Every structure is written in C-alpha cells, then in structure tokens.
Image 1 (tube, rainbow, N blue to C red):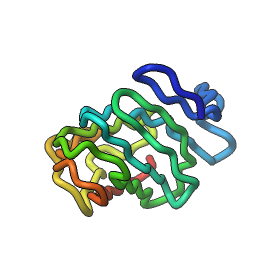
Image 2: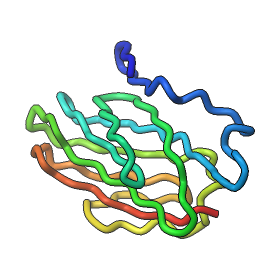
Image 3: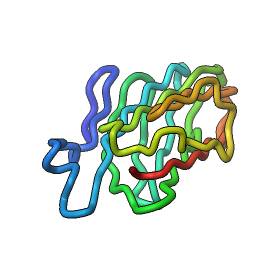
Length: 134
C-alpha cells in the first residue's frame, strides 16, 4: 500500500473492465470514504487479507464469489470522534440489485452498490454486511 495526503491506495488496484471478468471470476474495486477524525478501519472482503483505510478516500480490490459476499470492517484507531463511513462497490453491475444486507453496524443509507454507516468513534466498533454477486 502507498499513501498520499487524504488518499490510500492498494497497489493491486489496476482495474479494467477486462480485469473485472477473468473467466467467470469477477472482482470489485471498492472505495472507502471515512469522515471520522483520527479514524482508521481494517477492511476485509470475503476473508482476504485486510486493507487499512484511513480518514478520507481509500480504495481496494477484492475477488467476488458466487452467492453471498461478506465485507467486515473494524475501527482500529480513533480520536474518539464520531463520523461516517461510506463504501462503494464497482462495477455496480457486478452487485445484484437489492441484495445488500446489514449484519452489524448502524446503516444510515443503503444503495444498490453502496452503504453508509454511522460510527460512534470507539475502537473495536464493527460493521458487517453482505451482498450477492450478479
């Protein structure tokens, strides 16, 4: 991973539409927008290696599986300030419409391929949601 002010990039994010469809396998490039000052999340998609998303915009890439896909995020650093976390999954055409389901966390807004959660500003806070690959 590399960082720049306000942005964190996973180095494996070379995304192209051709890369999104490797045989029957699909990937999603997700973007994270964290508004909590001093906040940092550990994000895991389908049990893969974690990506750490700090305040501002971060991106990562994950393989999608047939059936249910699972996203887990845990607040690992905080300045004790509440905030919001928004995650967008791209390409949105890879996500079955209406399939986002919150398991844990306070969802503020659910879209077809995005979700926004309210964070209290406490370390260990956990967000989990699932969705279906189209």
